[in-house]
Image: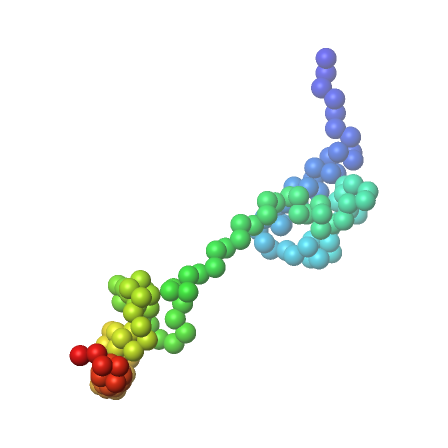
Length: 140
């Protein structure tokens, strides 16, 4: 038995499909650009009742969504925390360290890479605050 020959319409459908797939895969054309460049023959290959967007969306798989970056990977200004092996916030949080002590750790960790002696003075200020508050509470 001799194999059946493809009809002109089937050839047009295959040609249109491959051309659209190639153009869409290379990200060289958007869907509206694809529509503008398609020939009448290619347009006629799209089944009735199917929009161009639906047709093209079936050509390639859905892109995998990118995971949001960790807040620890993002630093709003500078790199004085990101360059440390353990960021102060990780250490402070993991050890349930209160605000004043945490501030001392933060300033002492970054002084060489950010504000120098000014950060050491801030750390000293938080230590003095902590000492004063603890004396008021009767802690010695």
